[in-house]
Image (cartoon, rainbow, N blue to C red; front, side, top):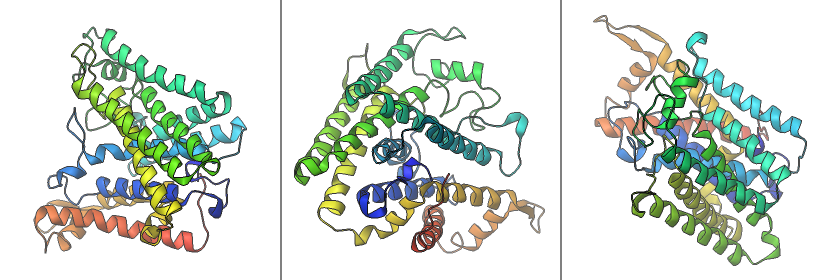
Amino acid sequence: MTDTDAPDLPVSARLLSLDVFRGATIAGMILVNNPGDWNTVYWPLLHAHWHGWTPTDLIFPFFLFIVGVSLTLSKRTSWKPALARALKLVGLGLLLNLYPYFPVAELRWPGVLQRIGVCYFAAWAAKRYLRPRGQVLLAIALVVGYFLVMTRVVGPEGHAPGFEIETNLAAQLDRVLLVPHVWSVTRTWDPEGVLSTFPAIATALVGLLFGEWLLGRNARSPFRTTLGLLLGGLVLTALGVAWGELAPASIVIPINKGLWTSSYVLLSGGLAAALLGLCYFVVDVGGLSRWATPFVSYGRNAIAVYVASGLLADTLSAVRWPAADGTLLSLGQRLYAFFPASVLPPYAASFVWALLFVVLFYLMAALLDRRGIYLKV
């Protein structure tokens, strides 16, 4: 478990709504990562091809936002445990990238857990060494600085500044610094690449700032606390939409998850804050939590179920043997063909397969939660 799971406080002292929000986010990650067939996926469960966004594009920044919020619940101040957690997250991410074939020479270095580890440590350092005003200034510097770099700096390959998929500055730097250790789907750039990690840190800082607002909830009314989350979130969302779609052409920066653009930081961070505000009002203020029990269990072992789901998916894909016609089929393909593909239309079958993953790992999380087992990283 990392500070993303708030281990320093007993369950009763933690925000139940944060567990719910974290659990829903991890369940969403598992749902979108495990369709039965990538060719038949409902559009909300796919990433936008490039510019723009879908609900799926919000899941990863929501988790980084939660990393920041959770840090406000941690009382540990020593840098050694924080660095150890960050390195363990990076190590788990590399393990997922290696498994099951262990291609060391072409190992993908970036990844989801690697970015979480880096952003966690950066946000921890901001909490430890900066006051809230300094954290605000750092977040602004990262967002504005990234915009300026992406729109003003000519890359090492000589391409003009811009946001095209192959010639933008982030992609150029990935080819210089990371190839061949990049995402196998692109081979030329990585969605968790070097440059885009800096605005991702800003996403965690947005969570840290809203978490500090939540930390002072006992000094104000629940309504005011909720209102601060909702209004703050909606303001950031509006700024993100305006910067990404309505601004003059000279300063517009498209909403883009692959580049983690500045407008994307504002949009996703704002929506995360607003949804956390709603969750806080319903669960912690209103006491309506029974509906959210599965998400609470997910949220208390978030990293464990995420890693386990990745290992299972890779195992189902790696175990293969020839069918009667000589076609090499994986265990996952055979199970999917048996059910649900044999009884449901293609898109519904693909969705149900992903939903089965969510249910399976809820059962794992619920068992761990019932026994009071919270796996630490």
